[in-house]
Figure (cartoon, rainbow, N blue to C red):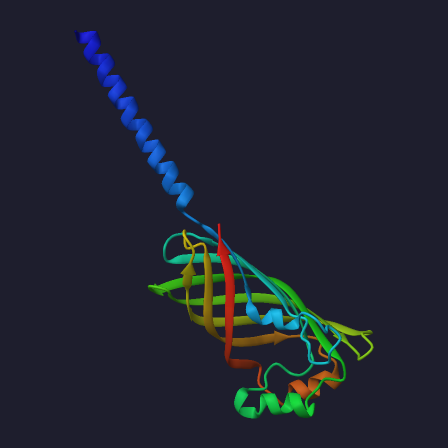
Length: 214
């Protein structure tokens, strides 16, 4: 009788332990800790890559959720600038693109890999900061290299996370950025004369990110 009681107790304990493992495994399978996203603006660059105002922008984010509030990630980005980035909306940004009055005597290609931190504030509302060291290449209008340099590019974001799908694996994140670049080296004089006319920051850039969790 005693042995039977021990056997039954052992089987009950094992069954409870097995159920706990199974539940834990199912919870783990349903938790989508990683995410990949990109800004929708890069889709507008597909097509005529040789166009003067095509920024040839490519950007990809890979992030991991540490917990429900904190998300860290890696950012890869490259783009081609045809005029200074510090021209604000109220300075007539779109007008200057139309008139070409502030166009560089060539292009500035910037490429880098950086890090990001995203903090969920309330429901889908979030704030994030990104630090992106950039390697700069200055080119003339014939794509011949003029010089190389370095820029430290920081951006600050506020936005909202909307999730879709059966497991909420798809998402979009409309947001506004404020971009700052304090450290900027080895700019050729012909480019620097234009840069010095404008700010070393850009405020209130709207954007929409599209992503998937896994």
